[in-house]
Image 1 (cartoon, rainbow, N blue to C red):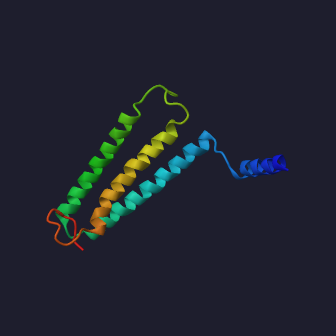
Image 2: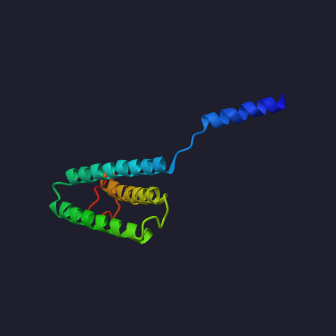
Image 3: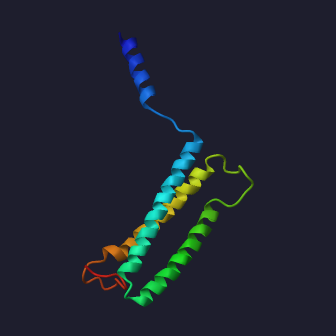
Length: 131
């Protein structure tokens, strides 16, 4: 009876679990980056809209965003220097996308500060609006 029960449990676990090919994992990671990039662009546009009256801020935000993109691209090449094809293996596209997603989410968090504002009395809030 115990062997029968164990066999059924293992069959259920096998049936319910799934595995992905490396190609599918690479595609999923790329989709995650695309979603994060879309969110970044949305947050960036919202900040520009929210602060449109502050032309000095929006001018500097545009400059900062262009420089951040250059930084992000350089950071990617630090993590994954260009090498001959296959150097990092088939997992490289997934790792590349995951790191891009991580950097992008960090930037989203940084930009959201201007949308969420800061508490009244924060003497170092700079251009961030207070709540």
